[in-house]
Amino acid sequence: MTRLLSARWFRHPAFIVFIVGMSVPFAYAPLRVAPLFFIAYAVFFTHAWRAVSRPTQLFLLGWAFAFGQLLVGLYWIGHAFLVDAEQFLWALPFAVTLLPAGLALFAAGAVTLWGALCRRFSLDKNQLAAFLLLALMWSAGETARAHVLTGFPWNLPTMVFASWVYPSQWVALVGIHGLGLLALICAALLAYPGARARGIGVVLIVVVIGVGVVRVGVLAPDTRSNVISKANQLVLVQPNIDQKEKWDPARRADIIDALFDQTHRAIQNNPAARLIVWPEAALPLYLDESTTFAKRLAGLLPRDTSLLTGAIRRTIDANDTRYFNSVMLWSGDGQLLATRDKTHLVPFGEYLPFQRVLEAIGLRQLTQLRGGYTSGHDRTPITLPDGRRLNPLVCYEAIFPYRAAATPRPDMLVNVTNDGWFGTSAGPYQHLAQASLRAVEQGLPLVRVANTGVSALVDGFGRTVGQIGLAQSGVIVAELPPPLHPTTFARVGHGPYALIWLISVWVLCRRRYRNKLIPDPQ
Image 1 (cartoon, one colour):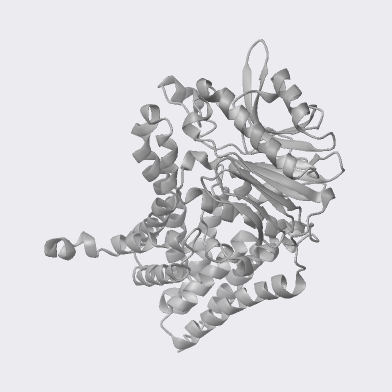
Image 2 (cartoon, one colour):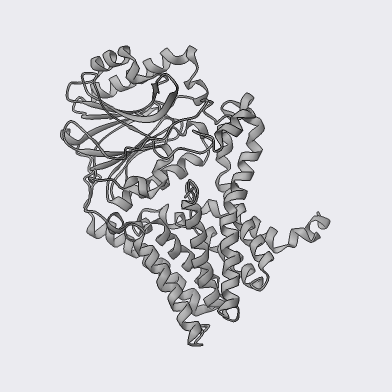
């Protein structure tokens, strides 16, 4: 043990920030130990400052710190490879290491560029200014990760604040990247070895929380009433079907019967329900091709009640068969009223990048659907029979802010998902936390129905009205919270974040060219 602890690699700064980075996901959902975020970033900022003049060292530090975060934060992806372990177990170690390793390159590039800017603008002589610039550059790297290629905005720095209701209110103003930048600025101030800067950092955290308290506690009405209006009554059904059994032909009839029986009991107990919501790919059949399903549904639903459900559908022509991961709206008499197809598909889960090459060597995506799914194009809201509109988000579409925006403005967001792939890991909790931000950004209630959990009804302030736990079967019966007025983010998107970034860069450049470096407050 003594030899291990004294080994040079064990004391290498890159290894230290890698280990420290592994603690950051514990600051996010479901544990939400927020101080770990600020401690970890303080260690990283300090080591980056010491290496500011060494580009190779900076690249390695940025990559190692991000890799540690992503390795732990995305460990749950490996659970998906255990559903059909006979086919995919071999790929598990590659998936849980190569994806984080690749995503960490965004941070590595951002930190390397930060070092170059510090040397160019002589900020390598001013630690506080350098720390603030590092916060900006790390934010830029995370923004790139969220948008480049297909984008993967999972466990961004914003989640240290956004995992809590009060500080999450800022995303209604500055979006997830703006709130993430605020978190990083707080971390930079707390990392600086000066009492005044650290005091400002603490005050800034208090302001972030305090503004949220005012918005929710003072300005917001209580939308979590226990009084249920018949006109707005919802029933969210979580069947909790094991992913290993879901597509087993021998279990098909039992799965269908179980979901119909569960829904029947919910309707009997709540006959005023106007909308029933089932999860993503709720039943193992093509609903729009099944006359038996339509007839059985007509016998289940009251005439003025609709069903919104996730479903797999296909189109067949002479040359090709295409599959879609869809949301369907059915009327009480068993008529298909509307369909929307998922537009933002999961790489390697629902389609293969470089498909022809990879399929030629025997690789398939996790769904084992040759050719994969086809993405849809229609992102307009679905109109219910009563005139209300909803914007359907299928699975991880809910982590993308752009998918929650729709024209005309809907009355609610509906996220149907199947997180059964990820067992009882942290993944479903992280997914819920990030989906809830769409409600705050848009000022709209979020109806979230997951096969195995976590299902929830969330109001426009991000408050949970009702929830069904992970790996449980159950229903939520509640009144739909009212939509709020359009938020600043709903109107202008990421404009405030871009403005904050540009102003910050302008201030740093102005100080440099006037030769008035930011003084180090003590």
